Length: 428
Image (cartoon, rainbow, N blue to C red):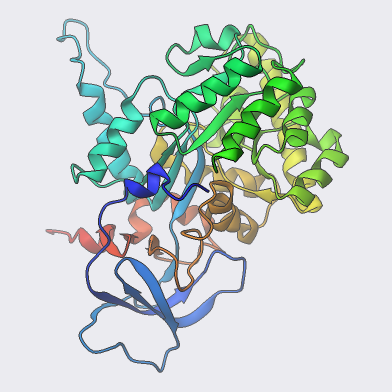
């Protein structure tokens, strides 16, 4: 990871002083069993110490009695289209046209709600225009509180239909030299990582999963240049030819990868290399018209894409379990609107066959590893940033509570209590 990652530079100032979070049930994000009656000492925005029940807080420390609630790492969404997946105003006929800056205020409101739902870090894997980096800069200067945002800038892609379907999202490049220039442009822009399209997208009716959209030589240059500068690479991968190229080229995270169950050898290679799979089941279910969060509503996609989507759901669920069994690291990526609902992806992974413990690891330390932030967030350990959530109930037994706004008791960002029911006393 580069020493000056833009997303970390843009973090707000950490909380001042020392904070004692007493009497918590700890789910630490590592997959270990929960621990009862643990206290957490936070200083200058970082976790300093985990204390047992009989220990007392240092003198002069601010105390919050957690009251036996569950304390855990903040959730991390590793695959979001931040500048796309927020609820834009529905303008009534005859209403004034939306002004140029209105979207930015609406996105800020959505990002505040993302943080309110316990999602403390979010990776933007492609948005149109500059609204995401503008939002991040606004948070840096205290305009509002939201999650830590990582962005890829523009998606590096060979010339293809997707660039026409999503104007302002792609940086199209052809040939190794142009690919290298495209990577450098994203780093100049302030990207935290590089995203590349190795295959077509299932949301574009003119693109097929196979063949690969770019050559091995083109992809090798993308990975070489990004890694040379210390940045990670994520790849959009659907068809097996492009997925194999990405794995062999050393891409850090495989996004979607729904057909990998057909290639156990590639899953074994991913596990050996430490490469991460981000399955994005929620969006696949949406295209297929089988999204539980939407009440299994009819799909609005073209018939061709719906048919492909149903096949993709079956393949992705098989791949999730095959990847787990092969020892591949997993991360969660909601890939859907609204951004605040990212914890739904955790439930989709459980429905597909993961245990709640496995899904919680994917949503915390697994996603932190995927983003290259494992030394900073994702677990509750000394030295980590105090991006924490405290919830009413046991997410190992009731993981759905993480989707319930009323059960997110407290959210801390860099040790500062910033949201939750504990800060919203009823007037009744």
